[in-house]
Length: 109
Length: 118
Image (tube, rainbow over all chains, first blue to last red):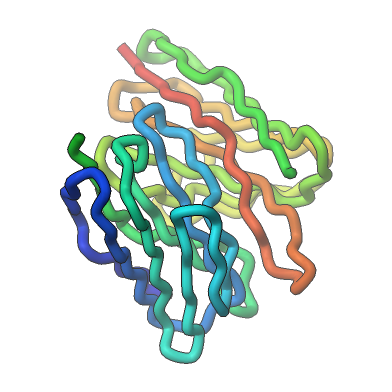
């Protein structure tokens, strides 16, 4: 099956720093989403981005489908950005969505 | 936007009892819902795909007789953990698919249900 790899697995930032999270996938996809899981477990959809670039405030994401990767940029990080960031992909021709292992982010004040 | 409601948000039960978790799509119809399981500090693992009006499709290694899924309407899927044991303690999360203009699935998640089996 499709492999979804996220890096880095863990990241510690000083408040105000920028960061880039990466998601590599091993097969063509028709769907890619980035989620933030807060400390209470709630999954918040950040971006639906099967290709191209999107921005939402301090967050932006880019997916290069032909090269099978996606990047999530966090600028001017805040302590409330802490949590786990998941990349999830839907397989072309299929219906399931598969999650990567996540990047655990901690932003220090 | 699409909203998925999941209930209960947490439940504690005795070993051997059954627990039902509900997942509702509040403002859209979902012919397909998905059930995930998440152990502490791990990723989400797909357990099964719930199809309205038909049997669920279970992932390899998931016991269909232990995790009963019913999707009786376009807005409700239920997961019943039967004869629960402590090893079933986990965070269970449902999601529903609202189709994007491209036809791909855009997932919206419920808030999750934390099950603790004593």
